[in-house]
Length: 627
Image (spheres, rainbow, N blue to C red):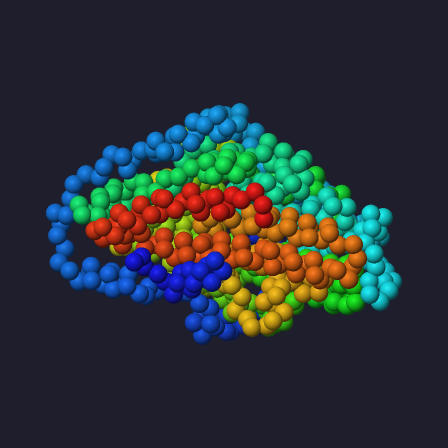
């Protein structure tokens, strides 16, 4: 039996019981959004944040203890690993990539690199210039400022008098909801708390299922994203061992050897879906703003503080932090994992909604502020009923042509207590994540003359590829350091990773019937189901949410039917997202225990074989054409 952590066991239980986004804006003054407290620096255990070390339980822990207590036989670990472990594209992947409908690899070139990078730069500049934002006289005359007179029982919804929708949060989820609303003829306004779009954050993998949702919402948006993106489905993806591991009984693996290899294009082709692409975050934002809805739809510096359900089909009244009032038939909370709308909807404690270090702070603030917010986030998470995953994450977008760029699009180097993820970011850049298992609220030292680059210093030690290796004596495959060394200290951002329970932890009948909606208010994206990044589905599920939510709203012919419509959206989406959320939690907790599998006779090879065989089925579930 594989090793299960306390949280992974819970995740698996949740999945059995059933059968992505952060806003990319310049952070406002976060001191006004979180209440600092001496308790913020206290133990996360006392604050009831679960999962600090994702400690192991069950038969696998017994196996680990037994293995460590047995005499070690050096001869068993000697020898050469099979050459087949080093082949990037095995026959089963090559046969799929050779299909007539499969995307064909466009080799890297200077022209392509400059085209992708220049478009990202231009999109970031456009964002900072507030192109398309609601400002000035148009803001003063906005439709949502006037409370209309609605009779008891509500009003009919017609083409001339459409449904009106307010969206909280200008990240991917909010932008998709706004674009979907506009595509159905609704009036929509989007409120974002930050002061402007910010050119931060790495590219986003828009997987096949999300592309299909966008294609159905607005074909022009879909075409622009595919045109701007880099295809990643034209190469292999998979899991590698980070350092030499194994033995003659369980199999020998050198550092960097493949454990599991798969393609993402086969399941997509089977479902009739487009191939996955990666697109720069500012480019995605600007495409959605330009093609998704009219200019003046997005209003910045607008944090929703509270809302009031007016009842009886009369809609919702929203109060912004500066006291401005807004009125509409529907409010959608797409304001991220620390959602203020969710706080009000579920009656959570004060401080449960706000700006925290695992949201926009992952890239939009300096290191000193990020350290403070990391401590405060521990307290916020406890009040918001969010789970600390047990991992802190270092991330960067390295302007570097990877040594394996022509054959590998996505890989994970696995190790004990940590793993290293890398993916093609387009334009000869690699987006990488180093996930290390440790308690929440930590931070790196301040730079000093003796150590001006503390983050790089730590990462060089954690993924050492020479000498005695890391602190556990493991000498890592040099690919991790290849990308780390191509990144600057300032480019590397650190944040703790939080997610949420796959299933509701409540006995409230209303929430069981309609988990993410109540009255004229609903949640979507990370506000509803924050998840670990292992499957790359956080933003993709948020996109599916936006499509399904607006599809349900488009059936409304009278405002009294809005609550039932939002409840239907919630019930439809919660099962699928909970399963994917559970898979992501389970996968994250198990990745750091692959090293155990590499040394167990019979069980190790069986585990790897089952993982390899299961990947196409997992991808088929993710890449469904309907959601």
